[in-house]
Image 1: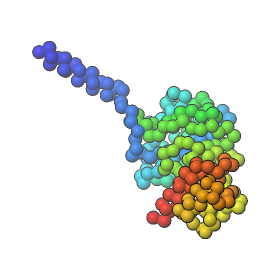
Image 2: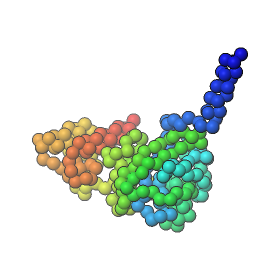
Image 3: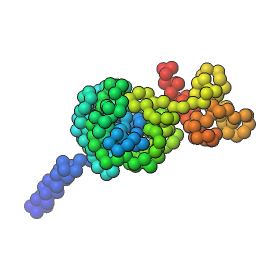
Image 4: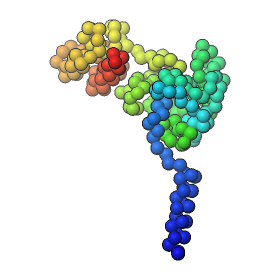
Length: 245
């Protein structure tokens, strides 16, 4: 009899634990990703940009933006909380300030509130209404301009897939990356109008000093020709292959 009561109490505690402390998992099916971070902006003018990578609308009602060990609410300001497929949206510390700073931006602006995004980088997260982590990472140092994601679909939070904007930001639109004036097409090292494995073989030869270097090969704009440029070229090749499908 005592064993039955013990089992009953145990099941009750387990069920209460599930309800009160819901499991935190990575929600792979809801591909809302952070694509740009403006930690460089003055206080109360900071913002992040998100993108819906799915083929269906995603409702952000009761979602949270996590920063400084705090879950920050998301509220409608310009547009609603439903992000359409392929749509960029802005989550702003003070939405009214963002709209005033960027009056030409007519897309979705979501109001939130946080103390300050750290310019040296910190952990941030997007959490859905079920307390599942949709995205979580520590962003890189970027004190002068916005930090932009190169390939939105790539789960890589290093300098291989993130780059500072050349002079400001690209809020609400496809991210912009500086290329050398001598390069007609970024990644096209042999200047044949294509970004393919021939360029990959060429950059390897350049790194091994088997052929002369080209300024077009510095794909991550760090003034050094090295293996991270190969990784960046692989990303560009994959993007080109997707376009051809």
